[in-house]
Image (cartoon, rainbow over all chains, first blue to last red; front, side):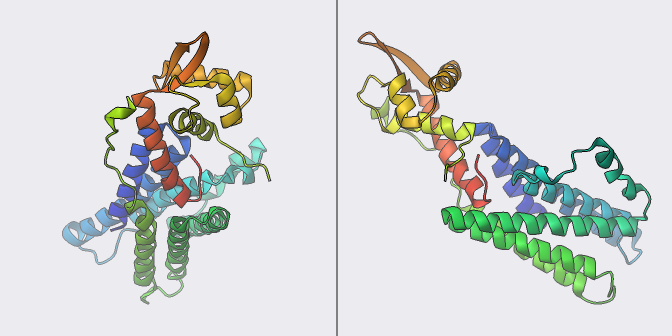
Length: 202
Length: 95
């Protein structure tokens, strides 16, 4: 579900980019293709575990890889809202910024990616809500709700580490899918059929 | 508050003017476009050169003055621009 919704929004963004050349649509295309790819990686992991390995649990590194790819997507959504101004300007800070990722285990990396995803999604939800107050576009409300649900899903997914045997992880996946559906609602209203012009215009 | 317009938005405004808000059937003069699209002369000259070279606008010599008319490709671009502008607005963004 997450793979399909992400893919459809990504494809619409690619069509938009090819038609207009807008860098904003290019960033959205990268964002949603990454989110879609992240869900796909996790789904493939579950399929391989179910049909081939049959170990009873998903390989941790596959889960981490899928979440990392999704985080790239969330980053590009936030980046479209000019989050670049928050980055440190110093080369030193930029170079050491990724160092901690090489010093921790895959479980801790997953924690980091989930928390980063949560921050990026919360940022995107707030910016989208603010844009609604500026232009009163109803689609923005749906997108803001979608991003908020995705953020909540990431938070619960991260919190499920505390209670590993509970249904928190399952609930987080349901909430994330609900978030993606909310993102899809305004996109589904975009007419993609080519409009024919009246000959009297020529 | 002054509204910031992206390069794409300015192109959209110029094309919209040449499609919907013409002085006459011959097209729009540079002066008219400057006033309607609210862009400086040097900037609009560069943009018009690009739009003509890309086939979105047609240059017409009418009654001694140079005018600009939107082409069929320009109309299709404008249609796509409005469609995907709405798409980006849903995400709180401008294209």
